[in-house]
Amino acid sequence: MDKGWRNQLYLVGDFVLTFFWILLFILSLAGIIDINQFPYRQIDTCILLFFFISYMVRLFRASNKKAYFINNIFDLLAIIPLNFLSGVFLLKANRLFRIVNLLAKLGHNKNSILYRNGFIYALYASGCIIFVGSGFYSLAENIGYKDSIWFSLVTMTTVGYGDIVPKTDLGRFIAAITMLFGIGFIGMLTSTITNYFKDRNTNKKKKASEIEELHTKVSELTQAVEHLTRNLEDKEK
Image (cartoon, rainbow, N blue to C red; front, top):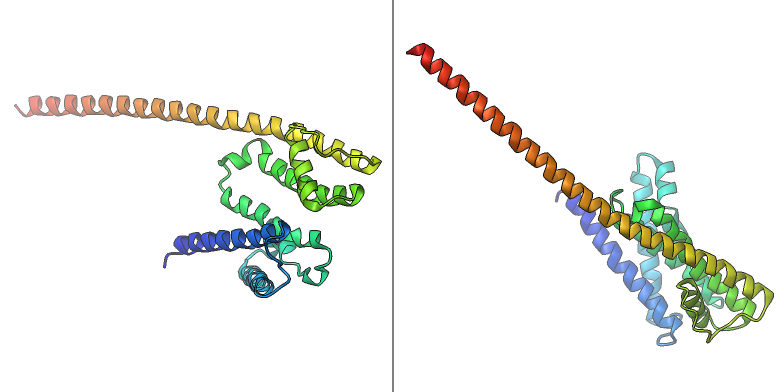
C-alpha cells in the first residue's frame, strides 16, 4: 500500500477512535454511563493503550525526535494515565488534548482556514479556557462541571443568558477572562473566515488571469510558428 494511503488510513482510524473516546467521556459526564464500570472502563483503557503504543512507535520512527515531541505535545498530554484519579473526574478531560492535536493534523495544510491569522492558536487557547477554566469555576462556585461548561460557552459566545452567574471573586475573575477571550475569539473567527474567502476569490482571479495570459502566449507562439513555416515554404519554392 502506498505511504500516502497508509497515512490517510491511519488518520481516519485515529479520528474514529478519538471520536469514540470523547463520546465515552461525554456520556459519562452526562450520567448516561459509568466509565469506571465494566465494560466501559476496559474499552477506555484499551483505547488509551492503543494511543500510547501509537505515540511510542511514531516517536521511535521519527528522524527528528525533538521536533516530533514538540509537534505532538498534545498527544503526549492525552495519553497520561489518570485513571487512578477517577475520583477527580475533571482530570479525565486530558483526552480533550487529543481533539486539539487532531484538529491540527486535519488542518496540517498551512493554506487551510485553521492557519489563517494564527486562528489555530486562538482555537487552542479557547479550548483550554473552556475546559480547564470550567474546572476552576466549578470549584470556585461549587457547581457541577456540566453547568460550568455551559456557563463558559454562554460567556465566551457573549450570549449571556444569566441563568448561571458568578458569586465569588475567583468566579468573577475566571468569568472576566472568559469574556475577554470570547470577544477576541469571535473577532478573530469573523476576520479569518472573511480573509479566507477573500483570498480564495483573489486566487481564483489570479489563476484565471494566468490562464488567460498563458492562452495569449500560446496563441502568439502558434502564430510565430505558422509564420516561420510559411517563410520556409516560400524559400523552398
